[in-house]
Image (cartoon, rainbow, N blue to C red):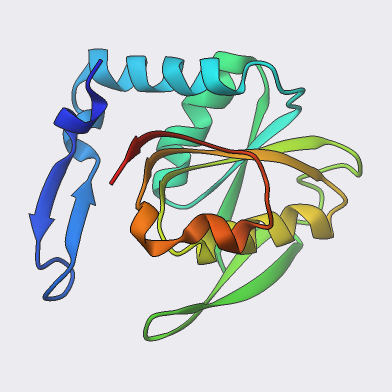
Length: 170
């Protein structure tokens, strides 16, 4: 399936010069969405995965169905202040400021093998912070899976050589 044909590119969003890759056009097509999750599943099927972790919000729409398809659990990674239990947090830099991600302290047991899943790999900031959180809890990051990679932003370089799987490259 030509997954790239399901991605809408919106010029000058959220600021001039950005060509935003909108996945909602893929998500609304049941056949394409299911096929994308199945293709990601095939890419990571040889890994020994105990859990999938996904950063909000679009990491939820990729990670949760992928976890379900693989028969493993899903761990949400949220913005600071959004989880009800005890959390750990890690900050990262954005283009214009900083942000913080959090996970429940009991989300991952030491030694569990975790795949990070998200819609997009761009600069790698969100994903490298997600990896740090998993490792803080003693989890082993076995890879990362994405619908889209913006290769011209070199996000892979920030991820410390982990195994990366993507369906679409721009």
